[in-house]
Image 1 (cartoon, rainbow, N blue to C red):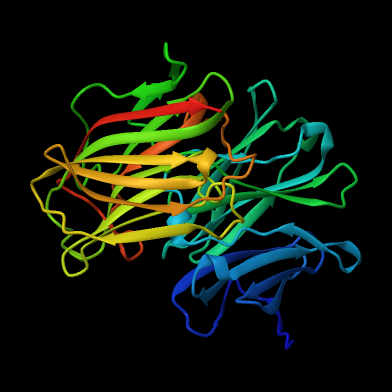
Image 2: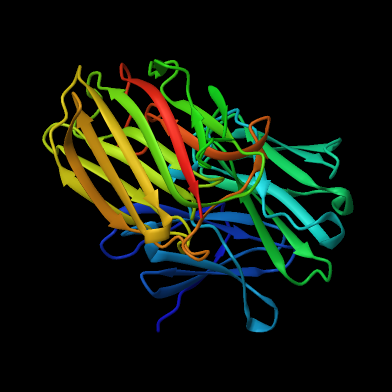
Length: 408
């Protein structure tokens, strides 16, 4: 297999792959030595390295994120930690305070550096906030990230750090690199939680029938505007739940098609656990005029970068209200979308899932967006000017949300 090797002298580099369709970004992380990151694109290996103490960002083209895999080179020639390969869809909006998941326990942490990638055309001003295990503030790190690049800074007091949050004034992808107590094993911590502020916070309560449910107040919970294009519902759970089947129901009143691209993907509902990778319960979209199809995907429990998806030809019309039912049946490894109009089912299709955990959806509380015990996120609509083909749904209304979960 032919290999190519390049040192990242600049903060950005482009590697091209055949049949390019989507742009994928891979951090290249320096640790005070020439630390190599191995990148595979559709099975072909490439190697890039950061110069001592430097961090870089590789931009490459691939058929999809599933075609890309990246690993830090471990000691003795062994493969090290998985490096996150991400797309623009996984960026956090400017100003969001994003917690990092997967950090080692303080006493098990030999080193820690925090940072962010910036894909905008302007320099980003960022801040990492360090907290002790009891939640008290430990310190703060201010840093800047140049356009289309990545930067990170060493964090002091590593033996006391229980949590880290990162925020920037441009859209960003946060991360941290830690090593274990022996200083040999790198651990990469990534952002978790919603991609914006929670507009509504609900709590899962156990019902008389044993189900766990959360219900929005009757009527519209999000009316998409240019100033407020995306609606976010944050859902709490007081305990970890092992779920056999989760059912989401909500209404969508279609407004005008996006003026940028009428046929683009208009979001109906997006449901996930604490993160995008391996945590999407369902992402439901409709492609507008000239394409006219419903589509949904999921990736719960799957290898990062992989998913299952399906679509169905159907014509939705503006100024009508549709009722959607999305069912994630972990016990039977299947997800299904049903769409109703005026009480009649007008569309229904399904796909296979691979939830793992003995065919169980694990709903585990975490802390993010200033809320404790968050367990599920539900988002409706897209931000303005998201990466094609995702379009904003300005003028659309979302109402009467409910999630019902059956324990295994």
